[in-house]
Length: 233
Picture 1 (cartoon, rainbow, N blue to C red):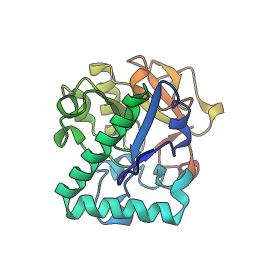
Picture 2: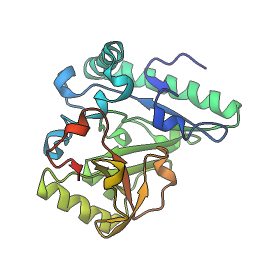
Picture 3: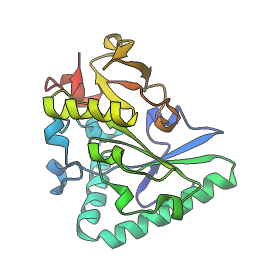
Picture 4: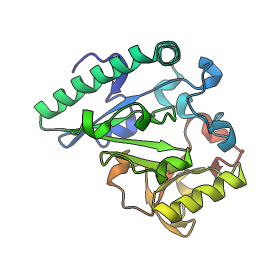
């Protein structure tokens, strides 16, 4: 597999479940503001997911992995043009690798960030063969007319009542799915927010989900200790 400067391919346990002969997922991981000095998740404090960030989950616990994410985030902060040039080069290589093997290339650019990539990349124009997807807490994004190959899932939190109410309203208005982090698998209900719940931990291919559903996840890493309202149950 190609050597990528920014993207990680096949290193995330949940995306691997969706990989294989049909899909292969690449993810961009950055560092949160508490580590990098730049806020790549503008709603993190409002939603209180900063302390429970998946930055601490899985391979993210390793110091070498965290250092790599710090370097990428510093590049985004200090040399945006170079960062985007490297990212485009990675995307081109990843697309070629997948297409050559008859695999659908899938990319999640906000692995541990919440950047409005639609303002930086012409998804349909530049990479029509790639399926992009992300989770977001920037509610206005799901009201936009997004590229057909870019799928967004809203991320829920009860830490801030106004934020929670706005997510629920956006879910009703747009049909955008909402990801909810539950304390454990045993705490996941069949319905939440008056919507049917689907299992979001069997894979990470959110663009395949039926609309108007709640996507159930369960707490990992530091999120297991969260009591802010970000983790439910």
